[in-house]
Length: 435
Image (cartoon, rainbow, N blue to C red):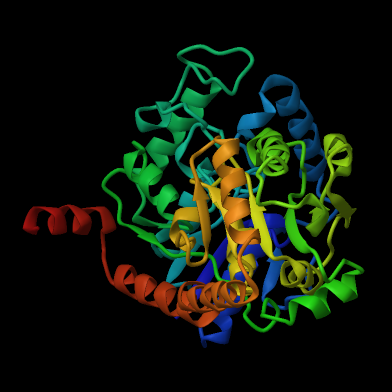
């Protein structure tokens, strides 16, 4: 089987997830190749679409600045119908093999849906939209918050500073609709939440949608003696470590205000001794001044580089807390669980897929800092035996759901089932009528 992966980059959160899929497929014997705009890895099966001197890169930077001014950052709005608009002959030259399936990952500022349609027609291969956020089925936003206009046809977009019924979100949505109606396509969702949202969306309604969780390398993200990991990082081995972080802690959807409130409330719980807890953070410390005024010991690790160092932090932690209030993942939940570290999170993103309350962590009511604090307390107050048991359950659960071989197997089965169909949507409709 031959797979063509399309992704804006081979680095960053979404890029790393796409690269993991690509490498896992290759490890399973699949001829998987990647086409990206920005390449930073040394993967020989990944190729940049454009020359590094191409002026489109400068236009891309200008467009990002324009969007920052014209849209609200919480929604992470991107103009997804703009691209280099490469001629067919250039695309044919870049795609020098005949794929059985095209997998479209995150494409913003790289390829437009119309470009994907060109590649689809060149190769005659079905298109699989791999969802890591909501961008593929909205008029521009990666996170819709409470807006559900993507269930119809967008427009009057709350992400835009100047909004109207026929605004740019409606225009982008309409172009997507025109293009996707001409495609044989199916969908992969990285969480059950994304699956639900995609099912409700107008663009993917009636398409075949499969939930396949993001995989994590169990050799890199593995269990380690927690005291040993703490000593390597210079942490107190006689304190319970609470770890949280994000690439940009000031991002509102990452819920750091709720995290700080939860820690404040945690200190008021009678069973909790602040002197026995150490807070470990990663990311941008400038937004966490309030943490320094609390009674906990605190160590900030800055930006963590590389999976091995990130795994070490999980291994040192007694609990990883994910306070995201608007998210499609994050992948950090998958990684923490693979390291045997329990997770406390709001009911958001992939939390419901991986956290078994009382067994592998705790799921708090969305945006309820009191409940988040209760969850943290329930995990950090476990005795040594119960803590070790929960750690083992985390590892076992992650191996069952997030092992690279399991992911590759599910992907191959899904690709095989759809690559033989002439029209995916028609097949889905026929299945629905039979059932």
